[in-house]
Image (cartoon, rainbow, N blue to C red):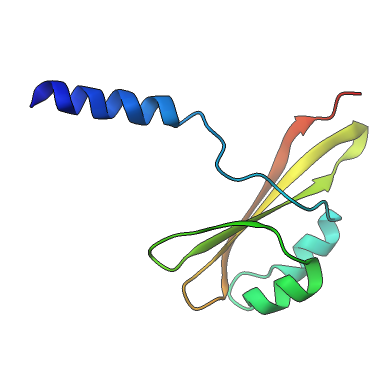
Length: 102
């Protein structure tokens, strides 16, 4: 039984480096910030303003959408929006995540 636990932990560790969510749309940061207001913006409002995005839906009813935004110097930022089961924005997170190389 102990070996099964070790195997499960190793499997989880191996999968943790994969990126499950890839942004599908590049949107200006100001637009993202104005559109996705925690506690008030709905899924339908965000979709109407920003368009469809890559998304992940969880069994709990929560859903996560991801967009990118341009940053000075050719970098890209990542903007993640989490919706509750009721379709209202619960949390947002943003940050510069990678450099575009030409």
